[in-house]
Amino acid sequence: MYPLLFRAVLSRFDPEFAHHAGMAVIRVLGVPPFSWATRALCAPASGHQVSALGLTFDSPFGVAAGFDKNAVGVRGLAALGFGHVEIGTVTAIPQDGNPKPRLFRLVPDRAVINRMGFNNAGADAAAKRLAKLRRRRPKTVIGVNIGKSRVVDVENATADYVESATKLAPLADYLAVNVSSPNTPGLRGLQAVETLAPLLRAVKDAAGSTPLLVKIAPDLPDEEIAAIGRLAVAEGLDGIIAHNTTIGRDGLKTDASVVDAAGAGGLSGAPLRERSMQVLRVVREAVPRDFCVISVGGVETASDVDERLDAGATLVQGYTAFLYRGPFWARQINRGLKRGAVRA
Image (cartoon, rainbow, N blue to C red):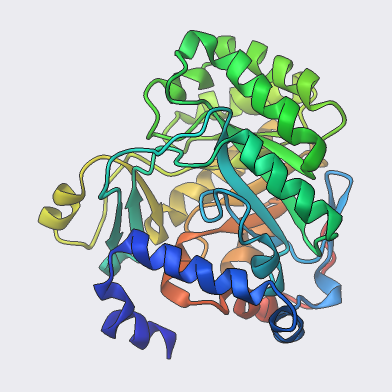
């Protein structure tokens, strides 16, 4: 039903407008009595709980950063059945992001190209919303993804990340350091081990007891991905998120003229599935078995989630397929997961 509605109606709207309209509905679903009915319909089965990062996740499947940049839809997303919500990317300084248009659908590929540019209201605004959420005791794990403010030079990135971590870590269930978006100039250069090590060390000190993860890019060579995995373990991090969007465009079904017209940005969605599995295996081999690995990229179905878990993922995230599969996507995945398998 939803795929037909999407193709006939929703796909005609500007993607960013459609996202904001959808988020407005999700916010309503997070408010009683709508949240009670939604949660009753979509709540994950008790047998799918996961223990990780010192936390209990009701489902191994959560929503990736980028969907709820400003922590405005957490309660609605939780009611829809996501086992965790990673908000952001949040920057220390509020920013509008890149000029519009900056979000493009590749419908034949069930994919999206975005060059949003960390548009968000800033760490102070996010902290206020998170504090309010904490008072309401949300029924989901909340991760906070932090990135570099665009106006801050790369050489001053560490202080910028530390400012966000200091404000947000006390309100987060876990903190994720994003050094892998392709839409902020110079950001991906921070993934070099010699640059990344002191940055992670400083952010870890600022995060205190809050679990800390790092989010990497899929476009790095496998040996560099493995090196970051070993670095994360050596620096005492709690996990890795593998991975962000790709700058690659290989193997797309969408007409090349449409892809070229979209321009620069990160590609997400179904085309990332194969590379995402490769990155997961590389990371898993580089880190201890009990080290948290969150797999994201090309996830669409319950079998995709099961495949990631079987390959060693601790948790799994999705985003792009939400646009193509509709509001009950998390419910579909939770209902389709292997039964009776408590993953730790």
